[in-house]
Image 1: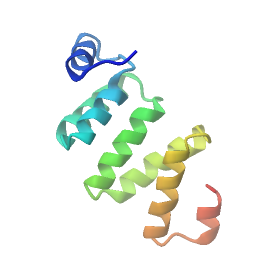
Image 2: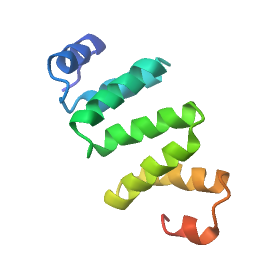
Image 3: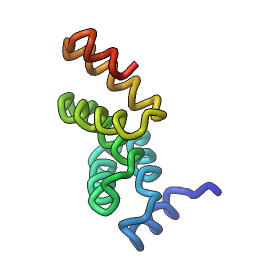
Length: 110
């Protein structure tokens, strides 16, 4: 089932703990509405801190905002708890290389 922006916003507004928040955050991100995306992630993760998709979009926002170390912490958390989240792992490896982390550190995630 696919929802449009208005429907997603309505679902989220009616229930801030709704699992649709990562989808809405991604939609805002793709539309370059970064502040809105950040707000949705922060609210959604307040209610569902274990939501790794929500954490992933928050990390993407931090990268966009040049808060690389915050993104690194989140991506490490995701990769430690969800080893199948390939996008998070790839972003983490890229960040680790950018930050000049050791090869041994990077190898843990590959």
